[in-house]
Image (cartoon, rainbow, N blue to C red; front, side, top):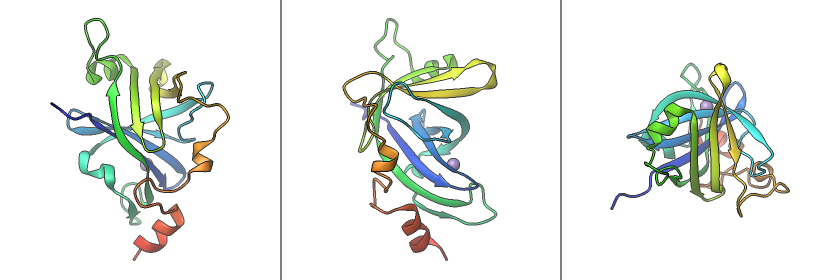
Length: 168
Ligand code: MN
């Protein structure tokens, strides 16, 4: 039996601080940059800008990308886990590739921090997407996970600690 695919959210301090949301689809990591990061409040719609696919083995990368390279700055694995496609069992069944091309993804995340249903929806002609927590038992408008749990899901380190320990 196939294992569930992985998702990762990498906190990335480059020119600006943002969160890279990546889903394993077809052997690569489909990626979106989320300037404000994910929210577990269903009333919050977070802008998600598609970025280039990354290789699967990048999912566990945490460290410093040197000046002059793409994405130069500090990268933290803020959350990591598995997900499943909530539309797989819809009438007819839809693959992740289908839902991406339709611009309407719904997934269930089993992360160390993020859990439950999330929708990722392409909005209008701009090519931009929105990440929205679905209204389920894992939703909570009162909790700010980005503030409460700023550290790495894999090493427990802060961005500053990663920068200090991984530079030079
Ligand atoms: Mn990034």
